[in-house]
Image 1 (cartoon, rainbow, N blue to C red):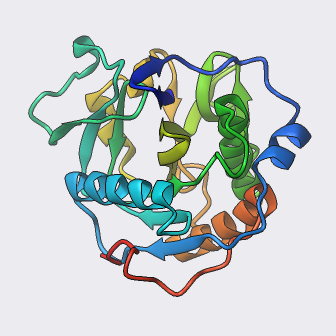
Image 2 (image 1 turned 180 degrees about the vertical axis):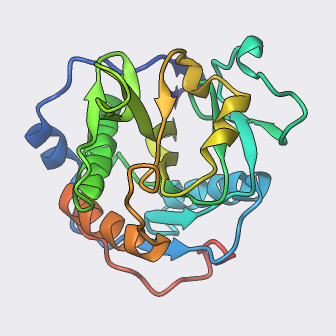
Length: 259
């Protein structure tokens, strides 16, 4: 998936430069000491509900009436189409609901067993640099996976995190986490999706992120039986390392409902 940046009414839909920035530079740019609110939804959240809540929260962050937020949730089975989605990449038209999404990128799948993390940060206060932000999201996922002894890797020209599967074939690799973001007035929303234990066959209804010839995997598929709370704990830990404070604030009237 790709980022979309909005500025002065214009929209850019292209991947950031894949000349990876120095990670230390990205981390220094993105760290901030102010607490970030964390919310975890205990049941699946419908996609339109999540988008509407993100839109409202992004506006509140921009207005200075709400803190930054990381929202952890799962969706019911569905496909989303980013701004670059190609009609031919939707292979099963009637399998699950399909939603047009304002994020960058192409088709992706969301469903139970996948931890979606919607990240709403104010890059005006951090660093208004989309390339550094994407690099920091990648580093966040890589450090989270490392806690489960999984080596997540970047790939030139492909946003997301990949793992090698040499036991399947020489040079084989599969995607374990997707990244798709939108940025408005340098407030980020949408975010990342980490495959914990989803039904991987559900990805067969699309060409995930428009990338043909590559598979998808999950922690469970790699033999790691991690619970969602365990994954959440490592996401919080790694977020603190990459982005700074990861404390939970007392939810305010501006918080999303903890659905």
